[in-house]
Length: 188
Image (cartoon, rainbow, N blue to C red; front, side, top):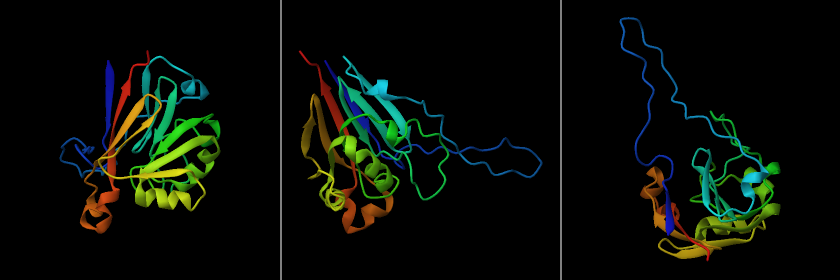
């Protein structure tokens, strides 16, 4: 039995907007706000016999698939503008990661402050060729992959798929904006 997880980057799909109820009084403008994140700690990184996916905020996720742990687009600190969520785990509280996957180079996906603090507990970094070249300038063990390529992290197979990411699809870096389809397989 396989579990399939498809990660859709922020900005793709349904849009959320908060609208005040109609009335005869002037309307206040409301800011859309995401649901609260669920805090987690080092126990979430322990070996497991199942796959658990946790939202870390924005476009980020933490996955523990039968003990193989990885984060996708972690933004856990150091963003250049206010974010409207509580960060569910700080980099200093992450005990280990088999990998970090980054979908593209925007700083809300490729967070240098977060990755710098995760580097000492992360075995490998994966992204497109362009983003991997940026990662290697920091001395991180980064592998660059082409869209359509498949690689594995323990029992997890990751396939890079193209993503429509607004301005990046109108420039030559469009090939460096990806989503990932992730499949886990049962361990016998």
